[in-house]
Length: 249
Image 1: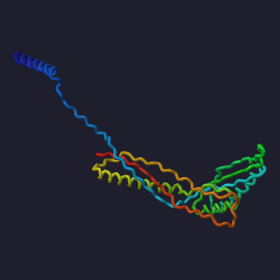
Image 2: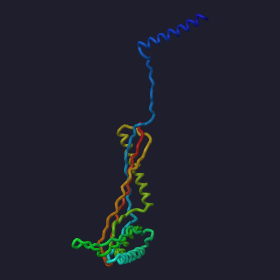
Image 3: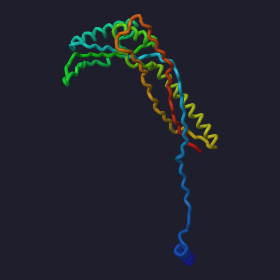
Image 4: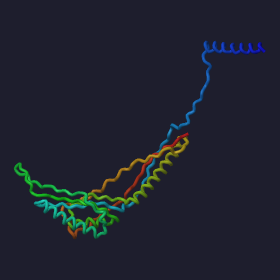
């Protein structure tokens, strides 16, 4: 029993001596470790744009009056009278009071420059009101009624869509954009011999808001027997652009 124990212990000692000599003169025993990265780093992107057009159903117009008189009070009275007449006239078209608001009221002195001196000759008072009209056919009638009752300023006019219609059309344009981006992604992937994985991100590019269409009439009230105002509305186009990112494998 003692001999076996001695032989075993001796074998262990010999093994460690040989291991020490091997690593000293040959180097460490090589071994391999496999590292696997399971996080997708490569993304495939495709962009699509969708557009939807519709005829505007709402108009925003700016109507105004400017009057000049020797005193501020006189100019204000003339302006107030004209604005009252304008409001009474356009309200007969069924325009709600909540859709009419004042957007500017200003008082400015008028000067006369002679021989290097500055003299106040009077005062001008200006009031502008903004009117929202729906249905849109009321826009031309409102302009005619306003100018026939003292309006001598007509500012920008914009043809738009009401909030409910706008939201509906934006959703439709957005869906078209997504469908287009998906089709483009699949076509490109097929051409490149790639396989698309799951969608990991969708981004929408904000669209620019169209500027109001300018419309200006000359100073001075329109004659009652003048030709009726005509306002072609054309179409409003709502667009959406999206970028879809896919995993690939």
